Each structure stands twice: as C-alpha cells, then as structure tokens.
Length: 464
Image 1 (tube, one colour):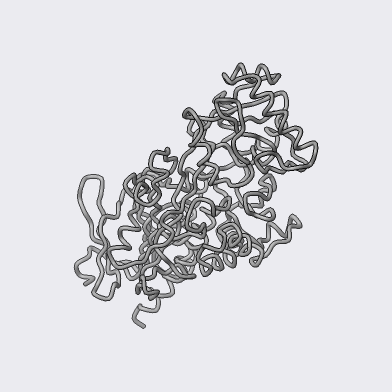
Image 2 (cartoon, rainbow, N blue to C red):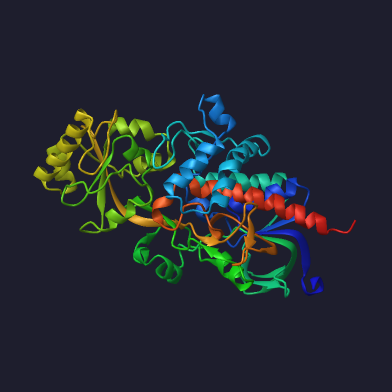
C-alpha cells in the first residue's frame, strides 16, 4: 500500500514533546530514519508546561551526591504509592529504565540534567531521585531536545496534525493522514508508528466521561491534549488502561496561572481556606490534594509560607517568575496577614498556633501531618492565592514493557508504540497514585524504549 502515500519513513513519531523527541532520538541513534511530526508551530505540549523534572533511580547523578537508590526501591515506592493497583510490568520498566535513560540523556545527548537536592523526598519518593536542569523549566527542555534533533539529523515537520491512521486487516499501521494549517492533507507511510501526542486533559468530553469529579476543574495542561493518540489506537483495536487516572494540582496561582512548587509545602508551607482554616495534610498527596481544595468554600485558597521557605525554593523558575510579577502578598504579623488576605483574624491565629504546637510536641497535627524538623510559617509571611486544576491525564493506550501497544487480549499490535500522555502510566487507577516528576519519567523512559524497539523492528523489515 506504500504507493498510496506521498512518501514512507521507517519510523514515524507523532508529538514533539519530551516523549516524542526522546523516541525520535533513540530511534535515530539506533540507526533508523525518523520523521517527527508536531501539530504546533512551536513545540510545547505538556512538557513545555511542566517543571522539566524527571523521577529516576540509580543514576550517576545520585551516586555523585552519595544517594543510595535502586530500581528495586523505586519499584517498591511505585507499588506502595499506587496501593499495588498499577500495572507491575510498566512499573518494573520505569523502575529499571528511568535511571539509565537519564544517564543516557546526560552522556549521549549532552543534556545538563542533575539531581535536584532541593526537591526533598516526599509524596511517595523515599529518597532524593528528582532530576532537572537547575534554573530551567519544561519549555527549555523542549527547546533543547529540538536542538538535539537537529544535531542528529532528525527531520521534524511542524504544523502537522494527525487526523487519521491507516492499517491493514492485521492491525499493522501502514501510514497516517496529517492536516496542514491551510486545510490541505498529506498521506505519509511508515513501517512503525510511535504515538507521543499527549493525553486528554483538554478534551472536556473525555474528562467528564472518565473522571467526572474533575469535569469543572481548570485545565492547566496543553490545549492540544485532546486524546488523539487514544482515538487512533482505538481505531486499530488497542486496549486502554487506567483512564480515570490523572495528576491534579492544588496550587495553581490565581490569576497568574503558574504552579506553586511542591517544595513550598514540603518545607513548611500550609494551605488555608477563606475562613482562615487548614483543611488537609499538605505533605500527604501532591496530586490528590486538589480534591480538598476544590471542596472549600469560595473559588480559591491561600498558600502561606515565609522568607525561610522562600530560600529553599528561590531557584525554581516558577517562584522566580511569581516574584517578578509581584504575586506574593506580604505581612509582618499574623494579624496583618489576616487583614491582607481578608481572613478572620482569630481563625488564622488559631490555625498557625495549632501547627506550631504540633511541631513543638513532635506529634501529628489534627490532619495527620508530622512536622519533624520543618517549621510552620512565621513572620515575614508570604502568601499566594491558588486554585485546584488538572494538569495531565495518566491513563491511555495499554503498552507492554517495551512500549508496544497491546490489544485487549494481550497480544501486540504489529508495529504501533506509544508513550507519554498517550499511554497508560504507572499512577494506578485514580488521582492518588501519582509520584512527583512521574509524568516526565514515563515520557522519557517509554519514549526511549519505544524508539529503540521501533527502530529495531523497522530495520528488520528493510531488504538485505
């Protein structure tokens, strides 16, 4: 059927975020010819809206810092966080391959990722294993990856939106149809196809159908996350998994639309509602905390922290930008803080006193938070107005440990691979199984596995 296409490539990658770029680079380095198509003029995707952080174990960066970690420990953390309800095959793949993938990015792709020792173990990670590019965010990661694509001779076609997929009676993908901005269509053939085109957080109908509790929540993911990969996979008979899973986020600043980094509550920050009261354990569940936030009176809550906590996170791009925008409110006393935020003075004073008492006694507070050596906020206070949102979905096409897409009966579709938001992740069936920096961990890890497997398959099909 190749004669029906304008041209054919051995490996076709759909999506120009972290997963797609890593998949394309892995395939190219394995010796395959690759074409990457991206729907936007400037690639961004969910990666571009992230902090650019990757959760990985057993890396050389960890070893250099004297951090002992292993794939076994990482696997155990994933299974514990997801209450044993994630796919163990995928969890094993992430645990085993995320660390080597980060090392490969650093050594083979010359990407400056290092262990972020400012991101303390929390929310399910039992040790320091979050890696990033200090002082840079997700869009910087996307831009750097596209420079590496150019360095490695990978062809990239932007403003090319996937609209259809073509397959034979056995489910083997023969090519795709893409739409261009002028309304024209092109048919491109391929020996293998990698879907790395995001999840469905921006598709209101899909969100309402799969996670109705988030139907009215704000979407802080990329508007292109419309579930295209899931629709394409469904057309050729792919299985789906964990479609109710997502990363919610409780601390999206209003009106700036920027996330408050997790390091703020980890170091002692608290959330209070418009009544001046705490309502959750801020260190328990980074994704699940969105639900108590959405349940509070009014449309927003406040994150309260202080100058000490600020020093722990002042290197993070979002904090730098929020400070440039004069987003924080300041106060030199509890009474002034209540006045500045429009909160009942007595309630706020009592809230802070209860947190201090729990910290001083070394016992859990009424929300189950154990403060240990972290101190609740004290003058000079800082505060940011925040709302709850959905960042990205964590369910999608069922894949195996090599990122090859599976049918409902467990058999493989012949030449279809997926990763990132298009594929099932390792966050379990709901919101509570998400580990920090797991979104990009699955993106780069399954991206690399998909790229290598697709290249191997494509090269095996070439005539001798």
